[in-house]
Length: 401
Image (cartoon, rainbow, N blue to C red; front, side, top):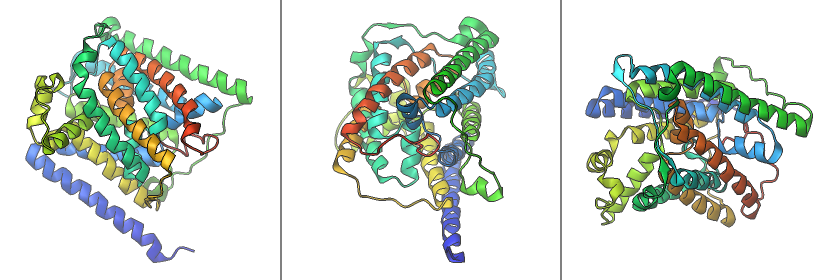
């Protein structure tokens, strides 16, 4: 039976972590601008939402591939639907609350297909996607810290090979907002989301005869703090917070560009030089390399996600890192992390920057990423038994990575 002291300790620790997040956000805001500080708070809220809703992409795709349970995928379609309804009018106008905004619209070519496939494969071996790696690492998963380290290494290697991949055949970027207008783009996107949702329902009923029961969660006052949250609440929260990112940063939510930057700065600390690599000669990347890492919006939000997940895990009383990692699982984390980082650079982003924010931006490359990334996940699910002995997949609500 839990004592009053047992209950107080997680609350006290979460208050301290929350205060640390706000203090760092304040210092960053004073040094680099109010918007940058506010984006760290948005990152913290993303971390809380991801953790409490256990909103993962990796497990949701794995459960559908192996068991034909589609609740996680349908939640992703809800998230995307809300996002395009919010994003497309703003991107069509070019401004949001008086501030210029742009989407993530990228070319479609060999690099995107190969990179997304590698990323999808890495998701299943590494145990998480970009957002999943951050929030599970922040939640105390020691194995995901290994995945994160090699995610960063893979990202750096990807920047070294970037120019070679960019020389391969590719089509020009295609924007649904520009092609069909905001209204037409929304209609096309919603039809595609609906088709995917219907397909998951058909496949699930074909395998099981009926849809999976949705766990009933009573969101009492305490439950808001300690979780868990309904999966759909997580979908709504992520869409709204991505829109907040668009409003504050002038562009959508991304994650992995910061990993490349961290890798480059770490490599330079060890005496290396990346400034001659073509990736780091692009004006924006060169400026980021010269500047403080804390001026980088993506870095600030990533740190916010980690701290936010730590707050959520502590409130839930589940922050208890275990460093007992089986050797095969450790090897999978290393290989998966390298694939995640390398694939994200080739594909102009990850499950967040390319899939979520890419589709929310109306970029056709986001849809290509979805197809190639899903194919990579299918291959990864087949390889998992060589590295893991976790038995049948659990519902995405339980396993958030």
